[in-house]
Length: 296
View (spheres, rainbow, N blue to C red):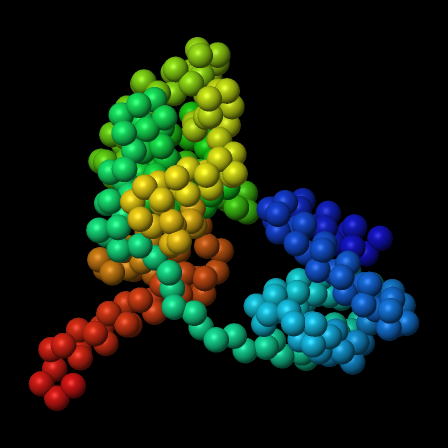
């Protein structure tokens, strides 16, 4: 009952994405199973000692620090909800410190690598579609889920922007550059008409990017597309759908974009999520300093 109420609240009130809610539910049920083995009882009866023991079990079972942190974050959100709703007066994970994670170097493509990738598709029906997808991904920094959910009504080629509903139901307007607009225009006028076989191709709510059945492009289809062009241009080990979003952000920051504007473009709720891209600028400044200062 507590878990059902929490998931319903996250979906209906907080407009949290289904994938995120599924992850919350898995994490909370895993903790519930741990409590059952421990003989504690219901979720609302858990203590700080239970939470600490659970964290220790995750560590001893070989779970990574990032996995433990994610599970801990899910439990924090869940117990804040329980306290707010009056199911319990104690948040058992409130005083539990998350394991420290070593910062990984941000993975992104260079401008030269992006250009090589965007030049890879040919002028076939498939190639025009693929070029449009890649150009829009790099031009806008949209998430994979946002790309595949785009509708014809979301695109304004004349003004050069896309309206994106966003991961949390908050719409935002994202501009597109000339190259992306040109690729998208070519795809819509030529490739998409062929793929749709004229079936509702002009309807505003029809999907923007479609497969050979004229249906909305899938997440799996996008992964296959990336793998194909990754092999073609020698970036197979490096290329993922998310890396184009990261590359968009890094290149914007490197060319002087301010953090607040980038947050808006990326659709981040918290500016802390955007600050990770500043690390690239800091590294760049250090490289410039080392190369140019007489006493570096």
